[in-house]
Length: 290
Image (tube, rainbow, N blue to C red):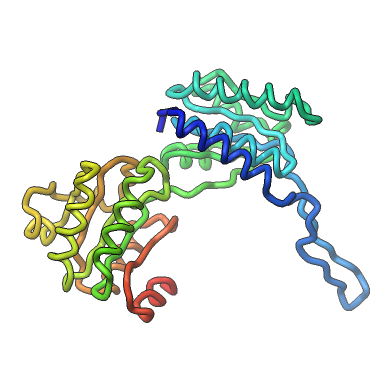
């Protein structure tokens, strides 16, 4: 998450350009109705004002948050973690320098260099100056902000995304999807963390998936049935089912049917994103509905 390679820096720059090229969201009419008594009620999108963002060890959030706030007509106050303070500061300075060449005031982006807990706590209570606060990071960070902030909070999603491989799945496709979802960016909240496999295809599917994941040295932590198929993988604990690893680690459980998969997701998921791999439309629709 901390790495800033040339490819990642290029990706961050492209991300800013993509945001700049989006349609202007400000002043858009969202609804326009006339009541029976003749009163016209019109809903128009407007900026929120000053948006504070508290985030952890991911430098790209600095450019992402600042550019999104600018595009939506808002000022931003950014407060990153100590792990990336120098990278964050450098990114902030580049964006401020760019603002000097634009018609916008450079002060519409602010960055807090004080990385103490006290500075974060103070930011959470600055209702007079901050209109909304957005935490980006771990469940612990988000929970702390939601619990302690007197500034209105927009709560972002914690991960632990599931992939369910159905009995009617194309197993080669499943292996490709799981490899991409786990290894392309394992430290982000929409990375796959938990794998559920129907018992009818468990042996063939798990061996095929394990072979692909071995290319990136992904550690699997499985239930009893998984370990019978792959004795060398680690045994999963109860904590593994609800854990957001943000790493090259994945839990795996063999289920009897789609209903058990859905029950598992309900119990341990966070409501972020879930996936089913199947050729069966009825099964796909069932998971989407539930």
